[in-house]
Amino acid sequence: MSNSSSAARIAADIRSDLGGLRAGARLPSTRALTVRFGASPVTVQQAIRMLVRDGLVESRPGAGNFVRHERPAPRSDFGWQTGALGALPPHGAFVGSTMQTPADDVIALHSGYPADDLLPARAVQSALARAARSRSALDRPPAAGLPELRAWFAREVAETAPAGGAAPPASDVVVMPGGQSALSSVFRALARPGDHIIMESPGYWGAIAAARQAGLVVVPVPRDGGAVDPIVLTEAFERTRARLLYAMPHFANPTGGSWSAGQAAAVLDVVRENAAFLVEDDWAHDFALDAPVRPLVAQDADGHVVYVRSLTKAISPAIRIAAVIARGPALSRIRTDRVVDGLYVSGVLQTAALEVVTSPGWQPHLRRMREQLRLRRDGFIALVDELLPAGTLTAVPSGGLNLWLRLPPGVDTTAFVAACARDGVLISPGDEWFPAEPTGAFVRVNYSAAPPARFEQAVRVLAANMA
Image (cartoon, rainbow, N blue to C red; front, side, top):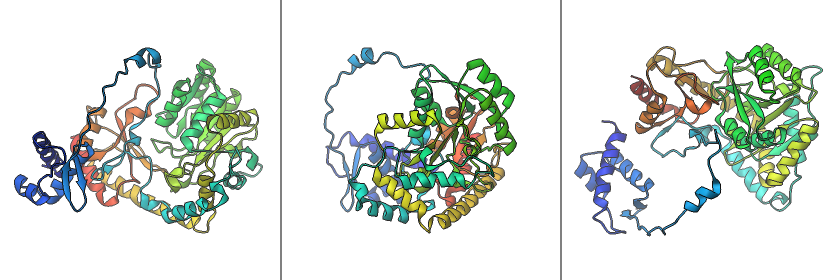
């Protein structure tokens, strides 16, 4: 029996004992429980943590474990809200599994963020401390963002622009409180409730949710290898008269696929022919491992591409900073939405982010981080190839943080994810990443969040539940 299964059994036995104890009573010591259950101290402690998470036990360092004091919850009647709120909207927004907060003892392959040791932690802490002592802690920043930060985002795109390209000026940049908020603003600003938006399928669950929250009708188009088929895309535009296409041309989440230069040019041609916008989500700009990122916005002078880039994953989950680059009336509408929605983005966070990305240590940090990500990606893939059925890995991504795995025939996605969770491994079910019915049984795993030393244990759990 696995440690997690033994711990769950012990926790169940202790839970049954709690009914006969008064609130505040001290539980037997770990040593006594170890003797009682014939288990290791680690397993007993894991069981106690389960009870703490359930709110049944209170752990006091140096004193022991105690039955938690429970206060009777007041009786509430929320029935009136049923009539006030009405029915849920069809295909309403949802929150994906990547937002789960994992327990300390699980292997988190579901996350959307890299592990702490891949982030510039000291630089972030120092930058936040200095920003808190600066005028940024007191002043209201410009609604569109700090000029220096906007200029940095513009330069990042300009460096990739081809000769004769369309490098954006800083005035085309709007700073946003994170990539998710940026997508919501773009969707609200450029479309009306009831409008159609075309999305790659599978695609980012957060974009699907944001579009539905804005009242848009999501129209899925399949990715053909790296990109959507221009013919299928043209038919979708003609059938729906949509004016928005949302896509991840580089290291798409969840599949990891990227558009070739030819595919990007073909998609842009279709967008232009249909007088539409391409919302380019450059979420993994800093996680390019084997191929450079060349944003499409640098190839578009007429404002068809609306570019979104976040710094949150590369700097820290606490630094909710992103940018949107747009041109013409679209830029004006996005700015207006940003002000109405939140007035402005915290000057402290903008100042700290700017310090981190303009410091001499930023580029060396990116090189080290990418090397570690390559090692983790390749190490995880080697285990997948060795321990899982042939064909499980759909593709080797050239960047990003994730692998897209196909489950064997007959394996149910929901049951598989639940079984892995019971065995201490969290993964993201593939169904969440499809705007419509899933085309197969898939799961997404993040190779950047869990310690590499636990990769083999994690993949063996996946293998056991595929059998």
